[in-house]
Image (cartoon, rainbow, N blue to C red):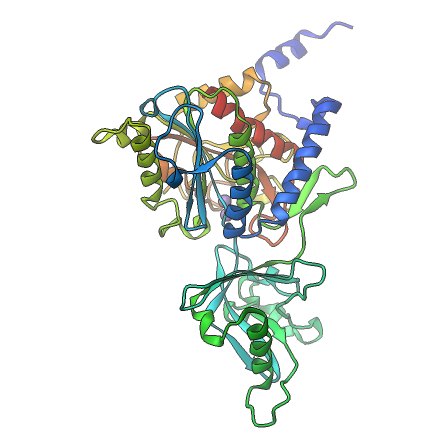
Length: 470
Ligand code: MN
Ligand code: MN
């Protein structure tokens, strides 16, 4: 039967959106599932920014990348990285064109919302030992009670010795938890607003209940915990003063659903974009412009500090590339930035039918519809947002459509409901063409976020083709 005129016109003129799963071949599905398994493997070993840097540097070294501080000269085809204090990472593959013609940047962040230990963390109350915590980033506090938590990070002794800590991930390890009130006695708690039901000061990690066997000791459970820690790590209570210890969910990322179409895991925001960007720079072929991958720290608390994107450390890295390629001259860095373009790779919001009221159905991202671009961020009238230029979006559309990569362009939520931001504005302020794009997720900032495998692979393909052709 021939198509009606109306149908033909619809197909020609409308922007028909549908699930990416409906368009793929068996071979593509296989690629998507294989890539997803590799991501799950990586994510389960990289729950914090420090661990992400470590896992990534291992992979980079195995693939011929060298620490930029260890090389004197840089030429086309060279692969270098810069680990910024082990907490953020910049990676570059030198292209055929001169650096002053601009870079192709993909920038993600590798910190995720969590609970940090306070400096004076350890205390005892009624024969229970606890760690005091201070939450990091935008969390819903009630989600962090009554789940298994692990402790990750470093303790640095005053003599400079650094101890890596990772307890709660191995099958043999103990885990830790924050208790919640039983419903039988929670009448008053349950009347409170969700935001006040669990107070920040009550997020105390339960770590012990066994007293040491010395009658003269006042806090026997606390001392017993310290004795165990001293035997294992050689530390005393004062060593917590110079530590960075983070509590993250002790459960692992897994395939979600009977159809295994999704991945549930801690820290998709933004390790899913960081991992796909890392894979993209590892695998991009025949690049013209120099490719740079930014894996930034402290995005969840405003990008400040010397490991955050606001830091001059990134400019220093690019200056080093200019110096070591012999290309540098006064103020050239400004020109490099003004000639550069960037995908700010951060997760987006997937439409969630259970909470549909916060979204504009015609301007939200849908899971499995492909990588989601946000033309602009900000809140209450785009305030504080970074707004991508139409010309730049058109160029990207051209590349994606040429290669049949499915994408969507969306907003975070309804206009008056809220908003958000990423590292995009920081690079845009330097003169770079920037747009936000990433994987839409459900349950963002919760201990167990959800992302579509189709979208994860679509983000990887987008970042790779951007390095190759933008
Ligand atoms: Mn993010
Ligand atoms: Mn976030």
